[in-house]
Amino acid sequence: MNYHETDPEFMEIFEHFAFDEVVNEEGQQLDDVTRHMAIMATLLGCQGEQEFRLELPRALDAGVTPVMAKEIIYQAVDYLGIGRVLPFLNAANEILTERGVKLPLEGQATTTKEDRLEKGIDAQAEIFGDHMREAWKAGHINRWLADNCFGDYYTRTGLDLAQREMITFCFLAAQGGCEPQLTAHAQGNMNLGNDEAFLMKVVSQCLPYIGYPRSLNAVTCIQNAAKARK
Image 1 (cartoon, rainbow, N blue to C red):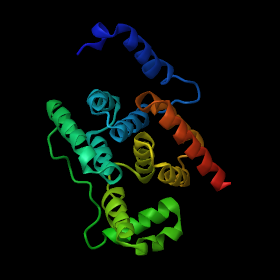
Image 2 (image 1 turned 90 degrees about the horizontal axis):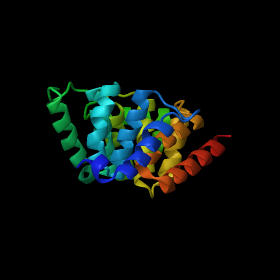
Image 3 (image 1 turned 180 degrees about the horizontal axis):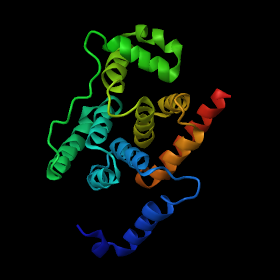
């Protein structure tokens, strides 16, 4: 579908806003790789598969590596579930194959089934503080959070811890209804150096893809997280 032919006025409005005004807003700019990572994670969060198919080639052309792209998709399973992520994995595999990328990509795992819990707890503590070292004992879902979410995924190479917290923030902001977790992960981002101003830039660059209500909710969560740190 050529929307420039069927909906020219709409495309003029949207493309000017998303690709000119937002991208070039003074004080709200991100480097290309970070911006595209955030947009990819946001599209996963809001289930924008068709736009994701347009975005992934743009991201790859801007410097996002195939490994980085795959790591964003893999980590999304923890926050969105496989039911919502599988179409995006299929899309990525199709696009990467069309671009001549040989699959599977090189492995990025750094944990084993024997040490994933320990290393997951270490990652949680680094992000949220040492009080998280006992959190896994609260029940089996808390244990899964430590060994699966953080031990299996956050410990992988391809993205660093700050990048992983940034994309998690985007997953949560984009799907909506996760404001308590979004506030907690805003705090986690700030603990890793992704400060209030940085997170505001992330929300600004992703706004065209999730709209104003969820973006404004994300801003409130950022502000609440920043107040809690003072």
